[in-house]
Image (cartoon, rainbow over all chains, first blue to last red; front, side, top):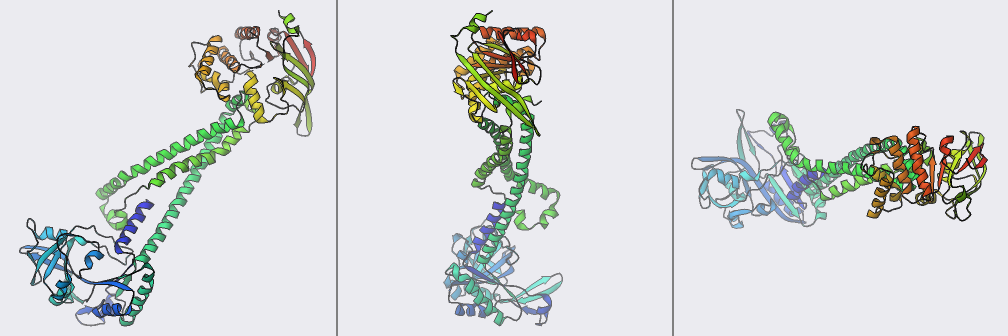
Length: 400
Length: 237
């Protein structure tokens, strides 16, 4: 379980990239934004921020600004509520997306402010059921965009600790950032529960990459102070995956320590149980011990006999434990399905990490489990075995 | 019947005790269980040790069986003084030179007849097929050839004692020590067991037997009577 949790977290964070710094626009709390006045609420990162950061942080190797808007994308009578992403060519590598066919956006598209679009797998499938989307055009707002490429499906990344939302890449439409700015603009209207809301956001996110892991903290600090200077309200968030990695590592360690502690306590309890059973066995078999001693068994022979019995007992336990561990692999999804069938709202209320948690079995842990159970047998069997061996043979023979 | 053979000086001494003493400390009192006992046992002897309870006969048997160490005195068994050996060495001596027959048979209930007979050999580290063959042969010798895989609980008292006798023979001991071997048996079965011991003795086995029944002691050629930790009588029954 511990392995499963940490694997999930580490995978997510690796996806973000350890040398990256992510700066996101965050909508400030309602009341403070209202005072800004007007129907459209401006907030978030500005294009100025982008240039300022580039100018002031020398260690930055790569910077990818992007803007994302929920928008309806149409192909004739088919429509999809897609996530429209205005971005630069670097966006592809940054998010580990792969091109299935065609090409991704190129620098030329940005300078020409071209009306081109790259569709994510699911988007393409929804808009073009049985046709080849490449070369066809889709409608976004009032404009038409030529589809130049398709990306491969990519699993969603889960949310991390509230600072990053879960991101599903499969319903994306990618267009050049400048095209989005000129054709659609910064203003977005959303109809929500009868009332309309508008907001003005220049950039949704800037992903910055520094050259070396050591430079991350410094760069993040500079960016922090830059943004603080120019933003009156905290309408941005800085996410440092390296920091998250460290936190996750800490969390994993805590989790593992906890598990080890629990395992340790159960081993202790189990060991004491074994010791008790063996002490009872030794008492019960006092006479047998006396007989064996009279017939030539040395103290070592008696210790060996009882230790062997204890180790057989405990390693049988260990083996059963490993088998139960393996049974967890099919059992966890099964339990989840059951829960889903009978208590769907309970499952829905669980954090997504827990919903998708898969137990992983580390190979070393099987070996360790077995060795530990043998060791527990040895350790807790030693005292009863020694007691058996140190009995006076005459007394033992007289024992009823 | 074999008084002449007992007296024969040709037979070698298998065990000898010299001025053996054993004190027990019980609280503040010291109990002198044996107060200087000297005896010699020769190859082929059949000796009965008799005496009232508290006379020291059990103590003597425990010392002869290397289950206990004397407070002072010497015990020479198979040519070496074993009186002050440590626990490990005594275990090895028991394993090599001694056979035990107990009043309550003392078979291990989880093991079959053959396995019970095999125990002494296991502690000699001999688990060869030849050893197993030997156990089967001994089971047949005591008349249990058809019950090799039975558990002790499935056998009568007499049969269990036969298994114990076979077990006492398996390591080819210098001395067989029998502690009231017929004590738990009715007189008819007791006679059968004594007949078996007689036969073994005729075959050359040295048997030292503790008993308080005169008619059982009559099977022996020599009776040692103890009283208060001293030898009161040593001679023919």
